[in-house]
Image 1 (tube, rainbow, N blue to C red):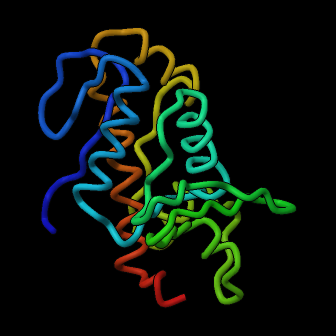
Image 2 (image 1 turned 90 degrees about the vertical axis):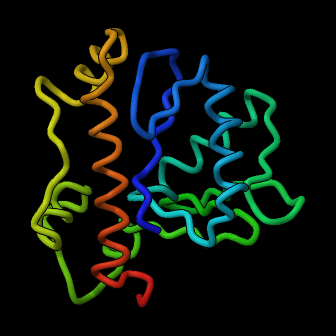
Length: 173
């Protein structure tokens, strides 16, 4: 729709742009639900969203006793564990996992199926690399005061996934 992406941050901070800083994780997850319901999206997409993001999100909603009503009915979102992956279910919304779509495509092969490799190959654009190791750098940024680098990192990941879905027509698969 031409709007830039919104980044939710589970930490009080001075931010600008389309970034919403919440006081804690519970407020952030409630805000995420509000955005999903207000926007009423048909599709929720991500890279390895079935294998990590949605199972983690749904579990955190359970732990924090937040209703898991992310869909278009009273039915709660849930995740079924399969042999090698998870199968999240959100009533009335289609979950599109670029990792799973590309991993199963017999016509295309990558050395690695991480978002950076795939985006470089298919879009000519990679992820924002974090200096000094991924987890260590995120921890360092999180414990600091300036979240700009982390916000840009998260925003780029979401933009790469959306471009893969749209430009490479992954919904057709």
